[in-house]
Structure formats: C-alpha cells, structure tokens
Picture 1 (spheres, rainbow over the protein chains, first blue to last red):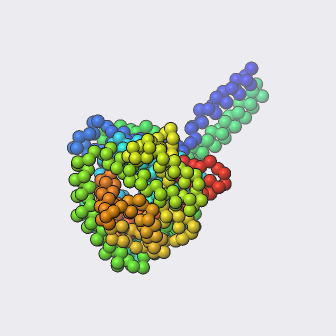
Picture 2 (picture 1 turned 60 degrees about the horizontal axis):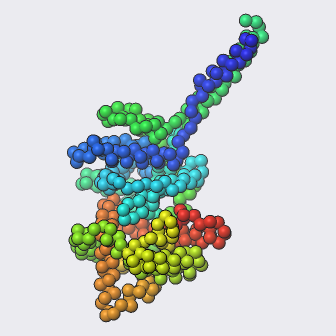
Picture 3 (picture 1 turned 135 degrees about the vertical axis):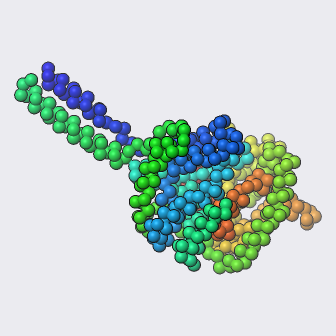
Amino acid sequence: MQKKWTGFFSVLMLFIFIVPVYAAAPLQVVETNVNKVLDVLRDPKLKAPAAKEAKTQRLRVIYKGMFNEVEFSRRTLGRNWNQLTPAQRAEFIELFEQVLEKAYLDKILSYTNEKIEYTREIVHSDKQAEVQTRVVTSSQEIPIFYRLVFAEGNWRVYDVVVENVSLVQNYRTQFNDILAKNNPEHLLQILRKRVKEQ
Amino acid sequence: MNISGRLYLVKYLAVAAMLAIFFIAQSAHASPPASSAAPAAEPSGLKSVLASSGAAKAEAAKKSVVDEDYVEDDEYYDDEAAEKAKIADPIEPFNRAMYHFNDKLYFWVLKPAAQGYKFVVPEAGRVSVRNLFSNLRTPTRFVSCLLQADFSGAATEAGRFAINTIWGIGGLLDPSSGQELNLKKQDTDLGQTLGFYGVGHGFYIVWPIFGPSSPRDSADIVGDYFLYPVSYLDPFYVPWCVRAYEEVNSTSLRIGDYESLKDAAIDPYIAIRDAYAQYRANKVKQRKIKFESFWSGQSKSENVEK
C-alpha cells in the first residue's frame, strides 16, 4: 500500500517541476508583436496628437522585444562589422536604431485600418526562419516578410523585406559604399549628424 | 515504514530529482519569451515596463554579443540572394545626374499634379482608372507569359482580359481578382522574360523620366511600347498625354512612398539603385520558381505569385 503511494507522489512531484518548455514559433512571435503594435496604434486613449510621445515610447518597448538589434546591425554591416571596435559597434547599433526610428516612425503611426494577413512561415533551419505577411490597404497589397534568427532562446527579427526589398541589404549596400572609401569613424560621424539634424 | 518502502522512496526521489534537474536545465536554455509571448504589460510608466519586459535583459545580453565578430561562413540563406541582386554601376556620374533630374521632376511636376488630381478625384475612381490602364497592358503580360512557357499565366491573362472587359465595364473594375474567380494579375514583363532566360542586367542606367533601368530592362521599355495599344493612337502626341495621365494617376495612389524611401536612406541614390536591383532580381526568381513548380506538376502556390 505504501509502495503505491510513494510511487504516486513521486510521479506527482515530477509534474511540479515541469515548466512549459517552449519558445514561441516564428509566426507567433511576429503575430503577437504586430498585434501589440496595432493595439497601440488603435488605442482610442492615444488618439490625440499630444499622445504621440506616449505612443512612441510604447512602440519602442515592443521593438526591443521583437527585434534582435545586434544581429540587425551586424548583418547590415556585413564583413565591415569586424573593422569596428566593440565600442564603435555599440554606438553604431544605437545610432542606426535612431536613424530607423526617425525614418519609419511617422510611416508606422499613419497606419490604422489596414488588414494584415499572415500568409506563411518558412523555417529554414533551427536558427533561421521567415514569416511572410501581406498588408492589405484600400488601394494595394504590400508583401512584408520578416526574417528571424533564433538566439538566446528567442526568435527575433533581424530583417524586414518590403516588396521584395530587404532592409538589411539595402542599408548594407549604402554602408559598403561609404566604408569602401572611408574609415568606420566617418560612417559614425555621418550617422551622428543624421540623428542630430532630424 | 519498512526497509523496502524506504528504498523505493529514495529511488523515486532520485529519479524525480534527476528529471527535475533535466527540465530546469532545458527551460533555462529555452526560456519562454517573456517579452514576445506574454500579453503586453500595461505600462504605468516606462521604467516599470523596461524592468518587467525582456528589454532590460536584452540590454544586458547585448553588451556581450557586440563583441562577436561577423562570420563569413555563417551560412545565412539570404546571403546568396544578396550577391545575385547586385548591379554594376560604371556610369555612376551620369546616373547620379539623371537621378537628380528625376528627383526634381517628381517634386516639382509629378507630385503637385498628383496631389491636385488626388484632391479632385476620390480614391475609388483612381483605383478604377488604374485598373483600366492595367487592363490595356494585358498584351505585354500575355506575351511575356507565353515567352516564358507559362501557359497557365497566359490563360489567366486572357481570361482576365475577357472578364474584366465585359463584366468590369471595359476594365474599370477587376472582378477576376475577386475570391470567386481568383484570377490574379500575372506580375511579369519583357525584362523579366529576358531575366528568366538568364540575361543579366548588364549595368545600371537611370533614364530621364523612365527612371532606374538597365540595358536588359530597357528592352522592356521598347517592347512595351509596341505591345501597349495606347502607343498606336493618333495623332502622335495623344499616346504621350495618355501615358502622362496614367503616371499622374498611379502616382496619386502612392504619394509618400518615394519620400519615405528617400528620407530613410543615408545615400538615396544608392538606396534606390539597390532597391531596384533587389526588386527585379526577386521578380525574376519568382518567375523561375513558378515555372519550375508548374512543370514539375505541383499545384501552383499562391504565395509564389505575390
């Protein structure tokens, strides 16, 4: 009788230690984050123009959770990444993020009622995946693909492909062009100036 | 409690402990993504959010990851595509001059015209006009599909033309794209056809008015001239007026796209050149995928189209 009970309890104890072992699938990661962004954009409390700063703050928090900024920057610089010292890299990540925020914030804030369709998820390997979505507006359909990398237990976005044009690749071409003739410090200077003037 | 009972207890406990350690180790390795899966924390203040979400954690992790080098043989699947989407630019000074010319043309002429037009004509009307012009361009797409041995695409285009012309009031509406018929426009042209057969871009040319192009895609401009019925209108200036109107109409539906692309760029000229190269390379790739999936007997994938 006792044997039975000890067996029963120890099996029960096993369940106590079972913590859900999972990392959300790439599609889920994109979908939950995009929905969070849409929630912020559609929030009636944040409709007033004065609430723009509050909105921006919230979007920034979502962005941090959704994007792998380091991978984003590293992929953008490509082999030039290795020319930068760790301090320069950290600064580059910071500046590049601000440049992107300035460039795309208004575009994102202007979105309201577009429908988003999640067309498919392609897992290329245990480290890379692509989630394909489509933004349907009243006059057109825009395909937007998110490329994700698995690191530190999370799938996070490292590239966004809009209408077949990869953001990372587009910036890489531009940075390559600058770094072919100048040193990394010059690139940082361009970015610093850029952040300041906007 | 007798001896054997105690032994069992010890044994079970040992197994339980081992399993527990195993699971804890696992879950530490792949911890549930607090920042992405958990419902959004209602931010009472930014500080609390930063502390509670993964942002703070990511911040700490970032410091160490920054030190990692970029490894060439990391085998990113998109690197190969990146190599393919490059375009040579031997006549850059000329192209840059033309880029500035087109840029001024856009901001001084095209955009004001499109804005005025947008103010007068509602969006639904402008979409209809776009459909009409798109219907008139059926021959280009039909011939391109045939040249690429894409018979299903050619049939789709022929069917679309018949249906949209008759039931869509001469092409003003696009009933073929509806859910019932689901005949989607075949997004192809003669430049893609050449690309499909392995013809490369050659190099980058920015034509005044026509914009980014290459010797290969210039063949498309010429071919399109002959296949576009509007070109045969009399007298000679009518086709150009129609084309100008077409351009104003389509621009009115995407005011702001060019501006945001330009504003986001560090060097707008390079950004547009790269976007052009990537865009065209992917279009050609999609046509190849479609060809292969069609002839290998697979059902055509909707996603390939897009």
